[in-house]
Image 1 (cartoon, one colour):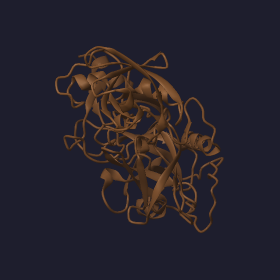
Image 2: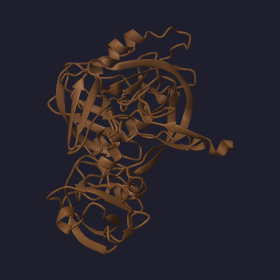
Image 3: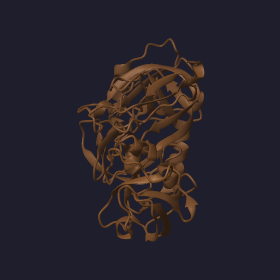
Length: 414
């Protein structure tokens, strides 16, 4: 076997919980593209669930420079500093001090849908409760909540907007005031060998967040985050570290030795289908994440940034390959076409149900544009809000063509 065909098994550290088998699901992918597979079990099968409404793209310490604020009700996002504090690489890392300072500004996020319960991490940006997290942590959820520091009060969450392509979401803790906040650093100043600490809701365990430390092992990494339910997404410009992370760390802060947030943990790698921590981890640079957050805060939608509630038709979909493998709940069922988005569930009373869509049907077009996978379906649906109409084309399980014009309703998070 040549180097170009070496395989490795990857999981994403995303959202904690159990897959239908009670463990991480996994697949193997070619090593050259360095894929970091988002396990459907740990990501809460978030991509497939995000498509419950056919809207998703696609289961987480400090020093004196960390300013913990509280008491005011500022709603403006904090500015990314021009430079980060300079800390010598030889300076001993006080992980305990970092944890004590940062953890009160970290939240455990619980994401519920009609059929799944997931978890992840978020970091508090403002004293009024604006929280930065990963899109895949909240995608597909119909109900979201955040608990401060794993032991503090809980608040319902409202999603202000997401960018599925960057895996960034900005959410608001409802009724929150006077909260402690993280201090932002500059990812532009990060260097290989810098000491870092990852903080988050690892494995969705009760109590304060988990804290691990390591170094920056590479910069500018590109990965393919993949799950068997909805294909893959490309993430680039990532920070690679060896700070061990687990499912549930997604959306949590990666901080430097000065206690400043330099990245948002989003993916990890593992050698097999276990829930062991991964010490090959990837974080979205904070400069990148905050640029998206500011666009969301401004309310300016774009081809990638989605503001507010999505419009949905009310189906859960999966890939043809997943259904053919039996993982979609259809046993030995073979879809009638080789590409498209296979319907694996229909919400009662939803527009799709009224149009006659049923499990086993395959959605092949939206407004006359071809649908090749759940991801392409999500991309086509992403610009439609509640009340808008879409023309849906599908092939039934018996091979007949079907079509209908559906008026979308407000749905769960993308």
